[in-house]
Length: 350
Image (tube, rainbow, N blue to C red; front, side, top):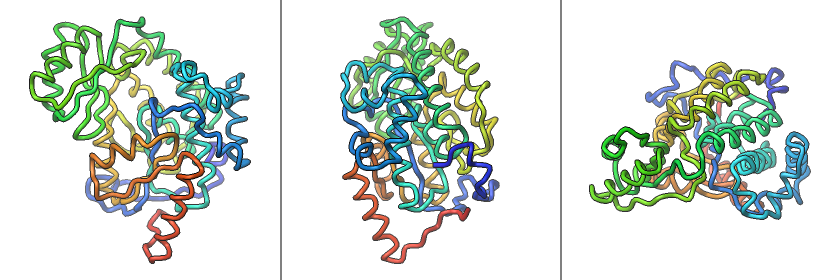
């Protein structure tokens, strides 16, 4: 992870951007990926905080940036407070960056980074696009704006399992009936989340069941994320992001809204704005990385959600997580075996 204040001092990797495509010509082998909301758990990050000074420093930096003890909420809860969106988002970001800073220098540098929804901010911090302290404050506001965009009960989300995207899109179109209902998270071939007005999403879940989905279930969320109902939040967040100091990413970042590489700071800002109302194209993003030579995905942050999705996308790829001391040691062992067996480190040189 490279803070934006340091990014200008670091020689940037120079992948041929004309080859950042489905051609698969950039062979890095490794991508760092960062989880989003839903991966939180009371106690997350505590063992890293206690053992590694750099992790402790990261939590203290977040506490100072926010003006309250985020670290205490991460370590002790209560769970209902940690679940509040404006707390959850900076909490997951902080744990992810603490874990990243611990693992830095112990494993190969990635050639690409990506993050699921909120995790895209972690990816940009990792790539030096923005300072960690700025990102923490921004996602705190992001969570607040998203929660306030729609009154509680007006919107909903539902997971549709075992139905392909074109059929889910048709279900949403038929269920909308003048309201909002659209795909929000295209997570894997097996899992797509829809979002919108409560009645429309309920109709969509019922239609999906009738049309052959393995399962369709409403999710216990506080707002209908990643749909057009979030436009008020998008407008408020745009003002924050446009005022933020950003720099060119050191590593290409795969953005959620386009499933495309972001290599400049202006596009980084605009895609984070568009992301609030746009669908998270996670499956497409992971396939882009695979097409560009990624064989190993390192999920950095709490939980193993993204590793689970990768098994649904492509089981032939290696996916590992780093979120605590136990998982850290497993990953270090894996990377040690890679080098011992002579598997080349194909990250782009800095």
